[in-house]
Image (cartoon, rainbow, N blue to C red; front, side, top):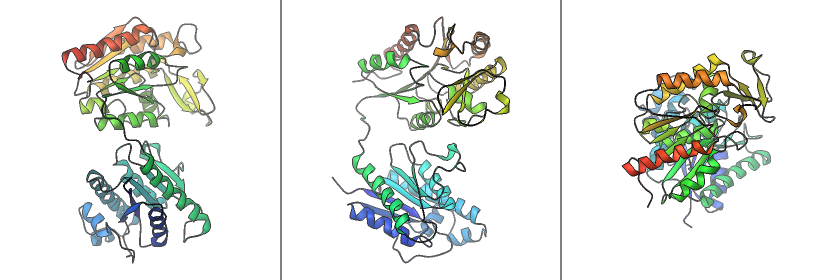
Length: 412
């Protein structure tokens, strides 16, 4: 096994000892380091590979210009832009295998920008005094980020903080050494869903797609899963997508923290990847179960899925807002796109007789999509529930048609 290289990022003017300790742990364990200094004011005696001058230049300025901001927030945002560009360039050049960044709130802010530019699959670790703090919005977290609290390390080395530092150094190096890269020999279909208690189509579709020669990756549409799905779509990782649980879009527009962001339902369309879409669980907004229910949801029916997630059943006006968000995002699709509308319901709990059955919401939602579907979308209404075999059959028929016409290449 060839030695793995870790991009080691931090402010070497104030954290030289800690960064040197990390480098020593990595190198003792058989790894190498590529050192990036994101300092602004001070200098370091530690040799680095990417200096603060390089970082500032990547942001389109020199370090004196950064210092002239006389504002640490603006200065570090400039350095964050430079670090992100340098990091991506170094990744594309194959210069490192994983990244390890060290920082307090300021360094964490910069590290999040840097890590967000790197694709899923590149090990990303941040040692932070604010690891997973509520001050970090979910939208700032790369979908596969790892963080560890920099305990007892605000100023100087101690046995307490060395424990955190050494764990992180071993974790990122171990990840780089043990990672099994995705198999690019099979075309990949990305699918979204929730658990089998709500959506079951994946149990029918996955073996059927695999028998056609595809690999299938199913993403749990609970915020970070959708962000990972969109990120891979934007990278062009999928031969096609079956985006059958778009609930995160409703979560986002109705203000839930369980959100994949405002780019949900845009990645495949923006990249031109063939996409088959269905609005699984559109009628529910998931909120954090252990927090008090927001005032806007008082009086709405709810379902406590577990201690982490509570689902709110949307009213008719709320369902129309979700329908309009689907229409808006799908209208931007640049590649082949089909929308399956299972008029019998879009989640197991919404079947007739089930706890969350919402026929009025279902009707206004479907009527809006049927009446206003963008011209670039191939519309497929079916008289079935999303968990019926007829739905899976409809999705496979569309994909088979695309393969027959060459829109989606047949797997070898």
